[in-house]
Length: 311
Image 1 (cartoon, rainbow, N blue to C red):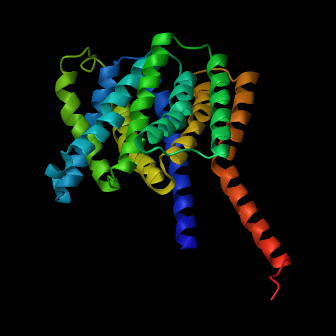
Image 2 (cartoon, rainbow, N blue to C red):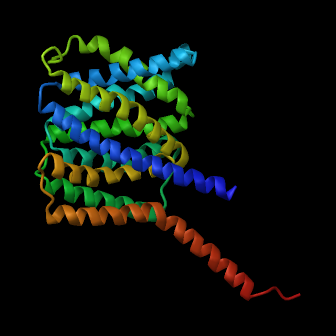
Image 3 (cartoon, one colour):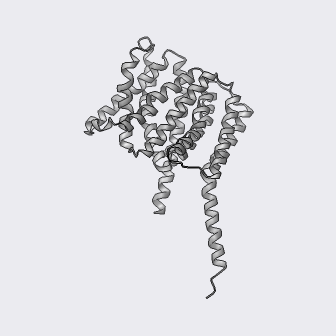
C-alpha cells in the first residue's frame, strides 16, 4: 500500500506543478489579449466554444452518455470553475495587473478551500498547516502591495473568482464527481450556457485579428480548459482540495516572473522577500506536519525499543 500511495502523492504533485505553469501563462496571455482587440466576453466565449467543440467530438466518438452530465451537482461544479470563475477573474484582471491577479486568486485559494471545507463538514487544518497558510498570506500581501495595488472593485472581482474556484475544488471532491465526467462536463455545459449570452454582450470578435483569436482559442480552449483542468482535477483527487490549492500559491511567483519577462513588470526587493516567505509557507503546509508525525513515530519506536517490558 505504501508504494501506490507514494506514487499517487508524487503524480498529484507533478500535476499540480503543471497547472502552476499553465495558469501562470494564462494570466499573461489573458492580460495581453485584453489589452489588444478582444473583450472579456470574447476571451470567455472563444475559450468555451473551442473547448466545447473539442470535447464534443471526443464524447461522440467515445459514445459518452451526455444526458448523464445534466445533474445539479455537475452543473454547479462546471459553472463554478467555468463561466463564473473565468468571467470574474478576467474582469478583475482587466482592472489590475498580472502579478496582482496571481496573488489574489491563487494566494487566497487555500484559505477559501479551508473555509468551505469547515462549513461543509467541519474539517480543520493542523497547526503546521495554519502556520503555512499564514506565511502564504503574508507573502501574497507583500507581493500585492509591491506591484502597484489594485482598485477595490478589482479586488472584489478577483476574490469572487477565488470563491467560485474554491467551491469547485471542494464540491468536486465532496460530491465524488469523477475525472472523466468533469473533463467533459465543464467545456460542454459552459459552451451551452455562455454562447447564447455572449451574443448580447459587448464584442470585438468580428474585427479582431485572426492571430489573436487563434492564440486565445488554442491556449484558453485547449491548454487551459482541457489540459489544465485534467491536471487540476487529478491533483485534487490525489492530494485533496486544500493541498492541491496550496500548490497553486506558486502561481503568483511564477506569474510575476513571467510578467517581468513578457509584460515588462519589475521584480523589486519586496517581491523577492515575498517569494522566500511563500516558499517557507508552502514547505510548512505541505511537509512540516508529515515530518512531525514521522519524528513522533520514530521517537516512540526508539523509546519502546530502549525500554523493553519486564516479564
